Length: 89
Image (tube, rainbow, N blue to C red; front, side, top):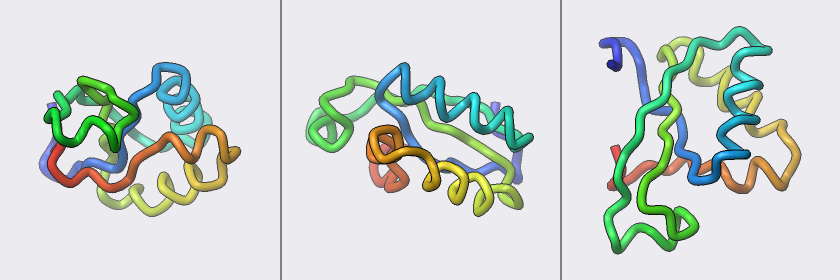
């Protein structure tokens, strides 16, 4: 359940990428939660054909730090994290 001050940070469609993002959040002591959202048919191409995605939720004061840490991950991981959640959340 999302608290009032939490925001949706990004979405991940791949389980291995999700695991790496979650481990990063734990290592950097950034609070997070995960929500699963169904992807509308016309949006699936954007999310690698996934029917549902894991949306990473964090406290609004930690969102900038979390995004910065994710953007510092290696390209093969970073490129599979979606910050544009239009139509999902």
